[in-house]
Image (cartoon, rainbow, N blue to C red; front, top):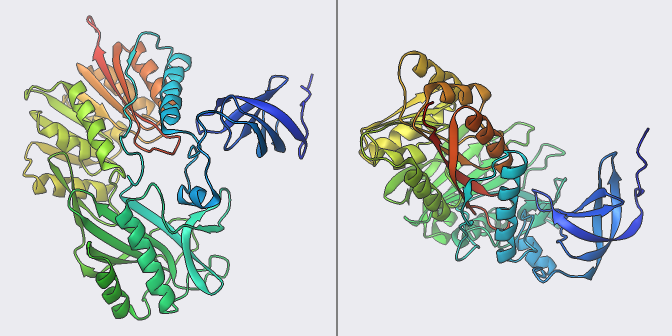
Length: 459
């Protein structure tokens, strides 16, 4: 028998919110039927408009708040634009940390069936703003002027943002300066409907420890009008700039960067440090956007690895070698694996940059390369994984269980897939002893975790 849906699309109803979803939307229930509403907090009473219904749940829009949560932060429209892309901007930072820690604890119990893991209190930031060291900002036009900002949810309409509260101030200044330079020179923005115009995105990267800035101009065209003037103006307005790069993306695509890259001025890379390890960062390098909290996360991973200098370590999903090079400071040998060839080139360059000789890197899928190493008789004392949001490939988890490293350190950006994978490793002979949540992305619903697993005796 088909279940009756207790609400109708476009209906206005009064609700009380009970909880938040994993992505920060408020959850209200009508006769047990959940309705998800952005910008709502638990304990709040509100009038909402039902915007979409499904058999199991609905979506709504907040119309009027009747009772507010004490954890609500009231934001003007200007402030909301400054927080562009932040799902939980309206929740106090104390409330954000509590929400993320609760989310981790719940999925460990519900999905992982892990009742006795030591889940430590989440580590937040003293100053949870202006932390991002990278921006990729779409450019458009309004009233004959260039605008730059973020896309409205579920659209490609640009909301102009003159200062993002989560971007480093040097990044904010760079984006505004480039926008003004192109606007003053009447160089048109790219129009994705007509596939005409020039400037698509402004990208900026900043080395917080070195003070070095990279500006990347992403255009549809192979050349930039008045390019010499553009470069001269960027250098004059942005004293931190060390690299100006032109990226050509002539395709009809949502992908930001194209294949063709030209250095217009300065260096191909900028540099930054995480702890004592120095990293070269190119326009396409993967590099954590919050280096302060990355240091916290990696130091915890290093602590959980418990290295004495005698261990062989495998780092699956090693990227540009960030965790590998941290581990190499205390390990006998580190082997890193990554499927992206350019990332492995960066990893090898970063090893040379730091004169680290006990780290080797291989290109390939972690589940394939590490399985082959195991079949060839190469095992690890400690295995570190830092997979994408989908978690570890099942074959890699099976290889870990067969290889039996004494310790597994699991770094995760998705508590749900972490809980699933921990359950598989537990069933394969491991014990999850500690789990540390870290707030890498304040004002958003994302949370990172690092977990320590130890091989049980007799396995």
